[in-house]
Image (cartoon, rainbow, N blue to C red; front, side):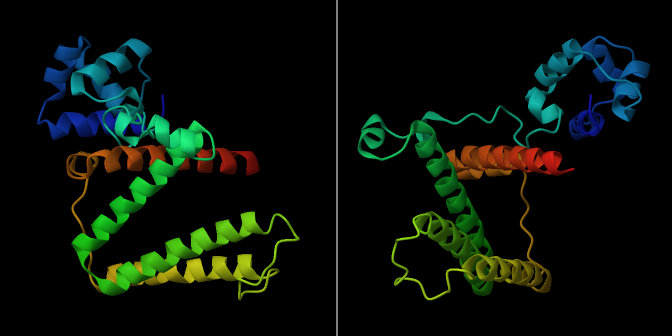
Length: 222
């Protein structure tokens, strides 16, 4: 199966305060076999995976550690652009969906920053995100070498390295502020889902898509 499955099924059982004997009985397996599944000694079959997902009311992707959202992370109707919006906007449907995912996730981040209420943290996170937007816009803008550079102050040959360095410094500052101010929010997928409504679905999808892309890129370079 994978290394996450044993950990997750053990966590779910203990979260509900259930014994191995009870869960094994409910799922129709022996306690010894369930113990082997939880320890990663044996791999379960597809039938047990599906039955376990139904038993704990979670998705199979959650059991396999492929998503942090307990229920399927589907894009909701609220996140899809209206027909009129698509008709009057440039780009395909996937362009519009990705736009919503990024915008809604950004809103979640700033809502969390508002809860924390630390001005320097909010400013530094803003600097980081604006640098990322600046770098991406300028890269697209500069694809045509004939486009004027008069709106930019940074040298065309150096802006990528300079913005990347600035973002690295900002990330160090962000982590330093969090550590220095002992900032901590009690969060979980369930809390996020209940608090952020449609923003939560966007966030979970963005996490899933981003981690899949990272794994694919790292896998190709290993």
